[in-house]
Each structure stands twice: as structure tokens, then as C-alpha cells.
Figure 1: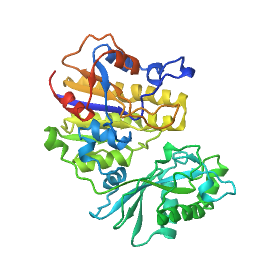
Figure 2: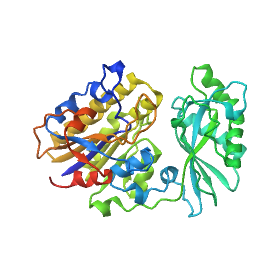
Figure 3: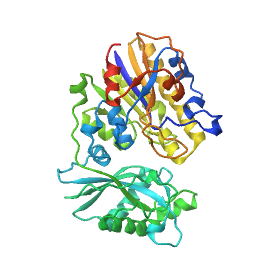
Figure 4: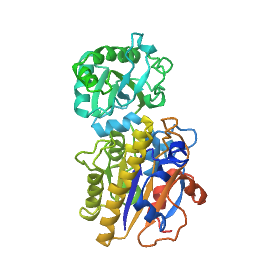
Length: 401
């Protein structure tokens, strides 16, 4: 038996007037999911433990079978694992986003945050900008590391874990209430704006109609994580297919193999088919038992408030990932189970995450079920099937039922 999780990050949503009162998941043209729905179990799964923030960090740990209340030590330490930063026990890591702030002539703290991703800046451009930040700000105590796209890392030696606000939670708002209270971190954010706002790359981006990556934004603080081996815990060998450092870091911590897929970038125009084929090859040619295919695009479109592109991201997931995996596994003759779900909702209305339960689809090629429900939020709720503790979902996938 082979096992697959296809995770559409932030795919769940609320009914939207523009979509005739449907959610993007219900509105999108998803023939493969529609076909699977008729022979699968549909239900709701609670991926975010009560009292915890609905981040992709806690949610994906949960989906992979790790109780966040036991294993979560912060978001950025997981990304540090992916980047290859060997954190000391006394190190504190922070996510360092390259964000877009408004550029009117006002004090830094009166600016408005326009874009948490600087128009999904390329890693190549971001690396040059981060080098300029590093030259201006790095010390023995504070060190910067380049990640992917807008997502980078700051390590504070002998630091402290501080409560800081994710930039995607305060889009279009004045930043004064959300900037760090720690004077050194705040001074570094302000200095980063001075360095980046006049950098040639950002001047060129503005000429091209792109948002400038004109400030660092620190958040997601945490300490070095310690995850139990996925294979030891589940008696299954696993691969991770993702473009983002967070998921790659979870995989490193869990001892899973990260597949590097050319053209996978965490955006709407990622290499969907490459991800699907990479996972299939790992399962059928390399003998792995389990593949986790993570697609970031629906979440990014939710943060952008872009209804049309969120629907498109879901349609791409159906046509270029789920269909490719299903057809390859069907042709192979291997029995398999596939679970499709988001990690959390990212409703267009609020452009950030919520803790609501998310719909799952569970298909077993050896035991197809007759099922009246379709794969979307309303039918998943109506089905009556619920997995109350998200970290038990992986056991449900692996167990006979």
C-alpha cells in the first residue's frame, strides 16, 4: 500500500458573493476531485489545537502526525532546519520577511504594510537584497540567512522568544501597533528600510510595476525543535514535496527526504506537474511508502485577496497534481490511499488564517466507498465525519478501516 497526502495550503474558505455564494473549493472546476468524492470518505478535520495560532507551522505539524502542543517550538526554527542553520540551544530564530511598506514621507512606524511577500519576489533578487541588509546590520549576536523568495531568517544568539505579529495578519494596516517592542529588533527593521528603499533592485522593481521589498519584518520566534523520526513513529518511509522552507524544515526534523523540484516556487505558477511526478517516482521507483505533496499557491492567493487566482490555484491542484498522481498510481496497479486537505482556511474576506476545521477527502483504491457528498466545506460538514485531533489524521490514513 502506498500513501499520499495532497495538501492545498489555505485552500478552505467561506462562501463568497462573487462566486454565487460558493466557496472557492465548491466553485472551482475540479473533475478529478469530483470523481474521487463519489468513492471516498468526506469529512472535517480539526488541524489547529484549541488555543494555538492557526499557522501553517502548527497545522502542517498536525497533519503530519505531530501534536503541536508537544512538538511546536516556533515557526522559524523549522525553517532554520531547511536552510541548514545549526541552531545552538541558546539561539532564538526569527522569520525575516522582505515586505513592502508604503513610501510616503512619514516616520517608519506610521507606514502601512502593503504586501507580506513583495509580489512573491524571486529568491535571486531577495538574496541580493538580504546581502545588503547583512552588510549593514549583521553582528556576532544577530545573523541573517537567505531562505526562499521573501522568507528569510534572523538568528539572535542568547536571545529571547518574543511575541511578534505575522505581516500577513496586518495587511493594509498602519504598522505602529505591530512593530517589535525590542529596541534592537525595531532599530534593525528601521535601518533595513533605509538600506532597501533606495536599493537598485527595488528601484528597478518599481519601474516594472512590482512592489519593492523595502523592509525586513521579524516574527515567528522560537527555539531549536526536536521531532521524533517520522519513519520510527509510523513504520513508513516518507518524502516531502514542497517549495517552502517551513515544510522542508519539518521534513528535515522528521528525517523525511526532501525532493527538490525544478521550478517549484511556492507561487501560483509553480511546477505542479513536477511535484506530482516527483512524488510518484519516489513511491513507485524509489520504494518510499508515503509522499506529502504541499502546494502553497491557494494560501498565497488568499493572503492577496485574489478570488479568481485562488480558484485557479485549486483547479491547478486538481488537474496538475491530483489527476497526475491518481492516473500514475492507477496504472501502476499499486494499492494506495490518498488524503486531500488544506492545513487551515485562508478566507479571502480577512486575508489571513483561521482555526476552523477543514474538509478532508480520503480515498482507498482497494476499498472505494459509495458516497453522496462532494469535496467542499459544506458537504464535509454535512457528512458528520470528524477527526477532532488533527495529529491523529495520519494514523487514520495509515490504518485499515
